[in-house]
Length: 295
Image 1 (spheres, helix red, strand yellow):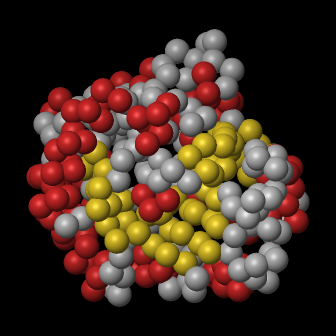
Image 2: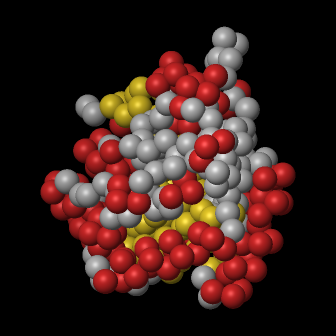
Image 3: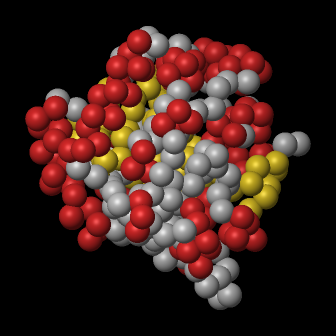
């Protein structure tokens, strides 16, 4: 039986993108190919913290027993405990069979379709879920997901499909493993250079095309921006994705992992959306819960 390393499971409302406000169970895998150390550090790279000075390297973990006990970080990736090696002792390593049972137990009625006919969404986030394709396939084959209808995979859109996972997804959306066909949402968050990640490593149009070509699925892009200076990169990325055959909705989100951080930039980002025609995405979990782990 395959095993998966993950940092948390929780039930909340979706905070970003197309399904803001929808009740969802989140499964956060451990591991990522990026660290996004630039978020929250401004534009002057000469003033950025060195990698060894980042919060994920300096936090005192001596009394921390679980990731939910960690404070919200304002610099770098706000989910660094889902990939940084210093937090590995805080995460879980379980069989996909156990995870499927545990995840489903977070739904209101221990099933994905409630008695009133409404369905609970399942969101695989991270970290970077697409690093775990073989294990994710085995997870979603478990009987606990037999009545699942809506799956969202939150990804940085850099990891190409492995052949067996691609075949599995075609079967999943056709209803080969569940009572009804499963609709997949690709909530992609390509990283602009403000994140600290290199453009040629972060913007992968061919990968986006692979995702978008899965039947019965919907792909959209979320870009985290600070101000209008980032808009040129958004436009450039949109053109590259469109040339690859992916003309998808684009949401802009304000940089900032805390309510205070969001307050500094969210109105400006909303104004940019009004001028550019791109969609605005809030970070509802920041507004409602302060972006604490488990929300």
